[in-house]
Length: 127
Image (cartoon, rainbow, N blue to C red; front, top):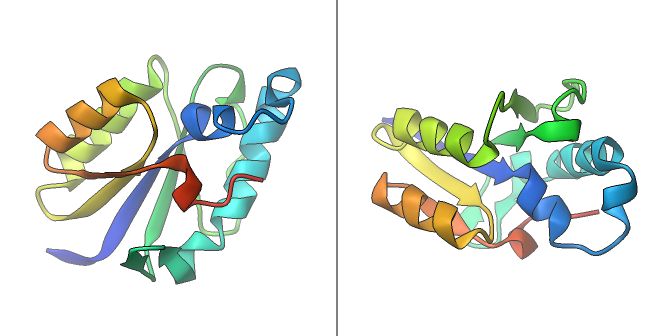
């Protein structure tokens, strides 16, 4: 079992949790989130000590944001971001601690059924 936990961030859901005008520039909001998530790599989440690996799942107009050199992996969903996240949890949860950051109730249920854990959007930097 891999000892470094995997944190998967539901980009659209976390960006949408802050009413800061993100809808005017979805890609820009996703880039700001990606860059802010770099702080999570060494620090972890409030109840999950670092280091952790972080994967940001993006979809729609944010899907084409570039991969950064900050350690946050960008995973592009060709269709539903929720389906992509569920696939990642299905792949990784059996062998390592996998935590999904989202407030989406339907996705939360799917993640828990697949053996993952869930945290709310406020557990990561959102600006």
